[in-house]
Image 1 (cartoon, rainbow, N blue to C red):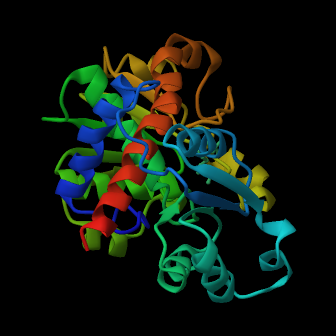
Image 2: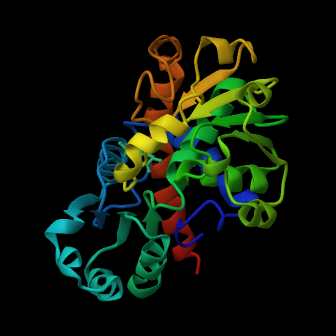
Length: 302
Ligand code: CP
Ligand code: NVA
C-alpha cells in the first residue's frame, strides 16, 4: 500500500493491517517506541472545511515525529488554477507526504502519481476512506470482532461516506443495507462493480432490522449547499431516532460528524450514543497514525 486513495483500491488484508496496527498505536500513545515521520514534513492540502481530519492529521504527524504544514488550497497557486500535476511535482521534491481533501477523486490520484510521495485521500466527492477505517476500528473495539456484521446506512446513500462503506463491505464481506430515497441511492453500476452483500431499500425500518450498526452522515455534503433545501425535503424521513433504534435493540449508533440534530439524527439519540460517536472521532487519530506508518513501511520495502 503506497498511498491511500480509496477503500476501493485496498485489499482485505491491507484494511485488516491498518486495523491491527491501530490497536498498537492507540495503546502506545505518548510512549511510541519509534517515530517513523522523524525529520519529515507532510502537507495537508485542503479545499474543503475540516475539524476532525485536520486536527487528527496535524496531531498524528507530530506524534510520529514529523512536521505538518497546513495549506488551504485557496491560499496557494492551486486556487488560482495551477494544475494539480504541477503542484504535485513541486511538492514531491520538498515534502515527504501529503494529505488531500478536495472535490475530484482524480485530483488525489493525479497528485499521488505526479508527486511520487505517500498521498492520503482525506475526503473527496467520491470517498472518505480515513473515516471508514476509523469506523471499522471503532466497531471492532465495541463488538470485539467484525464477524457476522450487519451495517445499516441511513440517509444520503450516494455520498462519499456511503460509497466508502460500500467498498468496505465488499472487501471485508460483511452485510450492508443502504436506506435512502430513490434519488439518493447508489447507482446500480457501482453496486455491480463492488459485488458483495449490499442491499438498497427506501424502507429505513427494513434496513435497521437486525443491524448491529445504524450509521448516518449529513444530508447536505460539502459542495452540495445549493441543493440544501431540496435535499432536506427529500431526506426528511431518513432520520435515526428512538423509533428507528427500536427496530434494532442494542445496535451501535454511529455518525462521522459534523452532526445536524433534528435532521439526519435527533438530539436525544445523538446524546444517548455520544460515547460511540466521539470515540469514532478519536479513533481517526490512531488509525491515521497506523496508516502513515504502514505507507512508509511499504515504500521502504520497495
Ligand atoms: N468526519 C470528518 O471528516 O470530519 P471533518 O469534516 O471535521 O474533518
Ligand atoms: N459527506 C460529508 C462528510 C463530512 C465529513 C461531506 O462530504 O460533507
